[in-house]
Length: 106
Image (cartoon, rainbow, N blue to C red; front, top):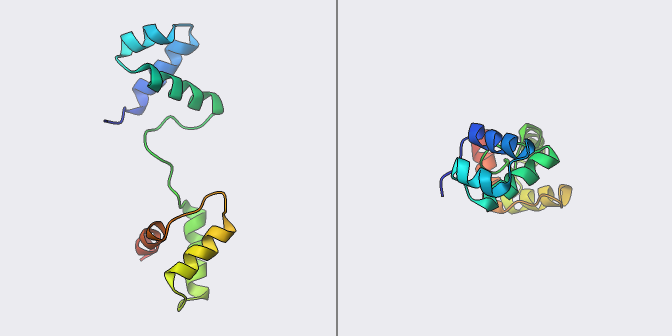
């Protein structure tokens, strides 16, 4: 499945907001009804319509991770992953995700 660029998503949302039915929008823009439902739900919450996932580590998370690595440089990566997941139980990460974040830090 190919990700749709942001502009067509915004046009689909605009058409729905102007009163066009979901079926008519699907036919006009050649997108699936399930995509229209997902995009309108996302737009209702105020979240971005940009394709893809939001990153697990934003700039703040990278700064905290960098400080953690400097404070405990000899700790195993599993220990760092467990620490991070205790700090953010709502957004747990796998060790592989943490490994990639550490690699990106340099």
